Length: 242
Image 1 (cartoon, rainbow, N blue to C red):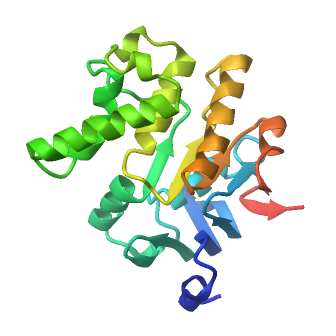
Image 2 (cartoon, rainbow, N blue to C red):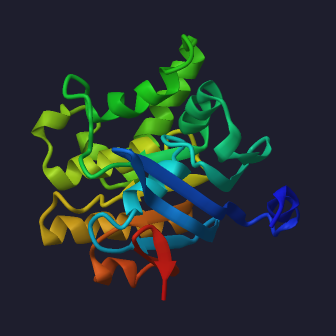
Image 3 (cartoon, one colour):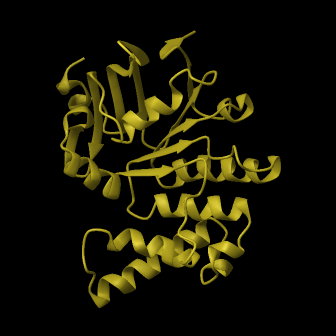
């Protein structure tokens, strides 16, 4: 596959990885965390990444998130401005893409405890600029709309400290959608939740992918959750098997 592959592919294709390799130093040797992985995800579709602990799941997601650069391969993302190889962008461009094109939901909600649920989302619109009054008004409306979407309209003005774990993860999902990304990455987002809250967050993620036309990559240990995704890959020692 070449750079032209995603360019000429159906415009529904959001992310495509080609022969991605990532290694980490281990004394005088190197450990292969991601071993020649290929994958693709369309907008509005979901891909589950499963595997035992240490199999490379989170490392693969970190590559897609531009948090780690692979030694080999390509990571094509279709953005508003065209197709970008995430494996070949500068740190500044990577940070920009995380603000505008890539939403991330972590195992923990990683919310700012001094901010309300609404302010968590509004802050995403202020990361790289000093917003005008009009921009602030638009950001607040967008935040309120998203909080309503995730079922937290009544909690918009509440401190996140007062929210349950499941509610906090819902805020995190809404925050990840604030910039209308083309790619949503979720790294075991239910691992710190009870089964009922985890099921609710999973329902939300899958519905979000469909309703917002965003490609979802979900790292999970839960086979029941993985089976609900549109596609699934299983990693062992960094390589796709099965």
